[in-house]
Image (cartoon, rainbow, N blue to C red; front, side, top):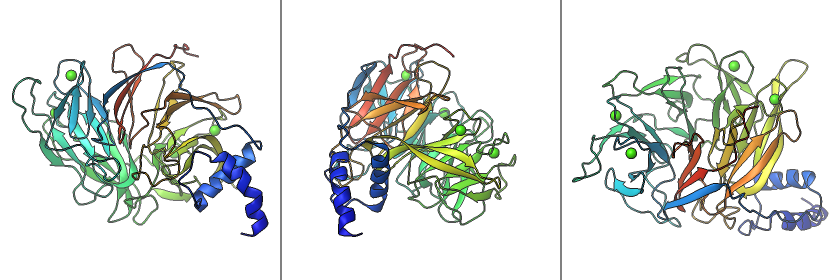
Length: 426
Ligand SMILES: [Ca+2]
Ligand SMILES: [Ca+2]
Ligand SMILES: [Ca+2]
Ligand SMILES: [Ca+2]
């Protein structure tokens, strides 16, 4: 890079990246992001003031770092949804803390926890919700079996069952998604040994405890390293069958979910990211992909474009540079207009304070989509002192019919109750 080029860029970089005080030497990735930002942002644009809209009621369950995964389930079977953060659960309605198995509070500036993503579901179908835990990338995933105990009395330890011992769970944002359409969530991820996209099928019959592994793709494909970033599931080519997306392209889905031969179609889906969401952002009838940078800065929608030869590719549009480290996302209809919204947030102290954007507030935000009306989305700030972890839950906790948001990360465990005025179905 010549000196003039640097001089040309430095003022814009300083202006646009003022919060990124730890990024002394912007990586190429960040530099690309900033180039795109400066192309889309007038010179000397004022720094964005991040003020929550004030329509979520926040409850801080704890400030302890217990887990970067979170789940919601009724663990004591009293009809109220409880909140799970790793080896701990918080009993509704007073959020009394209980331990499923021995663990501890972790140091957010020095350690990772033993829990990266969580899911609440009745795995063995005995009528009691269990807890699925995805551990450090590449380590075995497991689930804790509910000992069927009301919360009073001496606590009984929960039995731990490994769900994917030999393969580990590769890709840092495994999806909890129903792959085979039996109404039960499965896990979409990578197999680190064979480098295949696989899914782990949740037990389908009462009493069963084993998760079965099925390959969707051939071996040695992208997106399957333990530290690969970004995977999603949705219909890219509009043939009625869901496909798998990774940032290097997509795998064309077939009706056979055990085929192991889904064909890879290379396409540019941008930078390392968290959960990839497939939806038609601009309303042109073709599904697009929304992703957020896992360890740098940016939320994008990748517009599906088809060339004259019929080849599918994507054109990236920056949606937000409000906060870096957006290492999880989920879709839910927060404003009741019948269309799913995109929720993401900052993974607070992702690598213990060594990341670009670490001095940003712990922001949690959502995007509403407005197909047909450019720029097709609107950003809203939920909160600036919670953030998100490695998965985020959007589910109605308080029974008012609106999805609430629950997060756990190095900043603690938080419930954000949705008080957005219902827009009414379109
Ligand atoms: Ca309960
Ligand atoms: Ca159970
Ligand atoms: Ca398809
Ligand atoms: Ca589209």
